Length: 425
Ligand code: HAM
Image 1: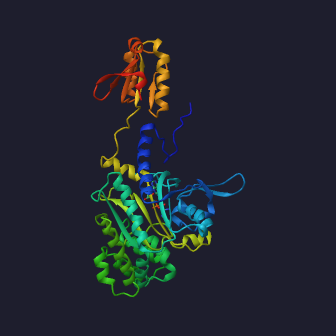
Image 2: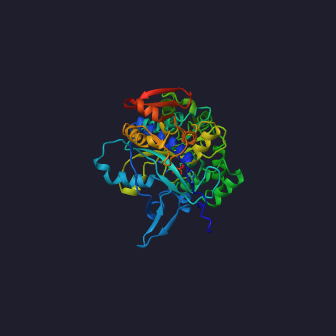
């Protein structure tokens, strides 16, 4: 017998697992709808072209790509943003702005499997297109945080670490990083928390071609992590003051929404993807045990690159894998779901037709109803009812049918009542 198991990094969803996934996805969808977002989707397989260049080297190395039977170079989608840019770009002219869209795609990345990192995941994507102002940035992060709050997470559990690529750009230019090396430098400083100082220094000079004094100055900048320290050190530096003013406004708006305690400035948040141009953020668990639950930011030039349309945009992706681990670690996952509303028990074979009729009537009325497909003893039927996590058991016996009633037992309290059959609902 061949032993068929899932491929590494892929998941089976048995019903209890799927119940958790549905719980998360329900919270995602409801949060987006509360913010006035509309749902969209696209194909899971896209032209390879869509990702090369636009997403940056990190994602391109992780692509599931192949040549299809028509000779096309294709890839399973590793992220949703290029698809979204294509969709909106194609119809941007006729759409009322801002466009606020969300999606719940399954994504595929050939990553080394580890905690919180698989080769497929579901990702809640929310994006706002056509709005350049900082109010949209604040609204977007508020949606990410409110989604997490709806799942039971508080400011004691999670923190959004925020930065701005425009600020980083101004600071790196000030440090002496040549304009042409900025993108390469971003990718390296993105890892500044995870790699030793010497390695970052070496990579900045060797991989990104940053002159040595400038590389040292970059590390000096990152010694000022918190907002006040950056303001104090660089507030007077050319090009930095206006970036700080925008961030001031951003933090003020989030505080006005009552979300201030969820948000912290952190210059080391750069984001691995190539297309970000403005405020960027990642949401982490406070204990720092897991990778980011959510990441996003402003990407004002991607629509131009993909669809030739000048449309500012911003968005985030929130993955189900990390979120599920976090909710489970903090005891915030719901109990295994309750089962059917009614389990119907026939005492003898003579009540079978009445049982079928009642089952159909209740189902037509929108109740969930189950019963044994084989004739069995009453005791066995009760065991099956418990296994089906039925809230109520309806007992139909010869005496009850004679009297036109059913006995309804509430499984939680054990209480029994006799209900006329025509009043069963
Ligand atoms: P990302 O940071 O690559 O962003 O992914 C967002 C989130 O998806 C991550 O924080 C993580 O929770 C989850 N995630 C990513 N890769 C994996 C994986 N291999 N296994 C499990 N979870 C994963 C983006 O994808 C951007 N396109 C988000 C965005 C939307 N930016 C603007 N709009």
